[in-house]
Length: 271
Ligand SMILES: O=C(O)CCC(=O)C(=O)O
Image 1 (cartoon, protein in one colour):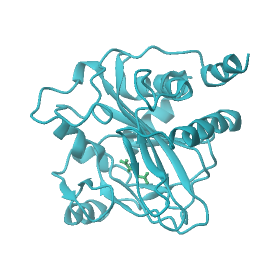
Image 2 (cartoon, rainbow, N blue to C red; image 1 turned 90 degrees about the vertical axis):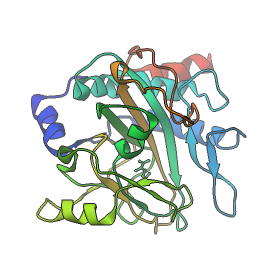
Image 3 (cartoon, rainbow, N blue to C red; image 1 turned 120 degrees about the vertical axis):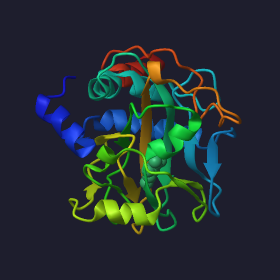
Image 4 (cartoon, helix red, strand yellow; image 1 turned 45 degrees about the vertical axis):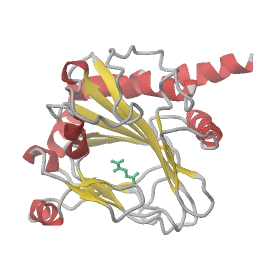
């Protein structure tokens, strides 16, 4: 899949690009079924919250050597519509995946993700340069009521703000201080709600400020995040590295698969 020059320019200018319904309903159904299957597995890299004890965040579905593996997720991470698009926006063919996760923001209970840059924490993983991009794939319709993502256009151009460790939410992570977010917002275009039908994708720069709100709707909101980095920019050695499911040690370049790989895997399994 080839992005147009306008799409590449928009990505560079805004720090994100939305591609509506890039994955088909059949592909989304396969990924949803795999997500439902895997959320019952007991493994590191699966985080449960709330009274029902169901998985709310799950990592590393793309690597064959772990308990959360799914061939459909591996295919998702390597087809031209994902890996190929990441190669174009990052202008390099040699990419690996820093991590792959799915956030299942539950109806009514699923809470806010404060404004942050992904490179806020990834730099602390030992990664020197912000040559990284995340592709978010909607497995549900994303709505404002349901706690969709918001992106602050152009915010990637200022580089990385020093993050603080936010412990106010169940998942605890490196967020951007409110004063810097407010200063960055002043005079900038309004944040953009990343809404769309299932299968819609947003690819965004690792320094783009983004956040999401509470899920006030009656439906859970599932979204996959595929985080690509240049092989040439793999993390350096650090003390106490985070686990493999969130800071991959597989730095081999990823190969492109055929674009129908998600559906072909399902056909093969049915034979
Ligand atoms: O899933 C969400 O609502 C936000 C997730 C996010 O921003 C992240 O994982 O960096």
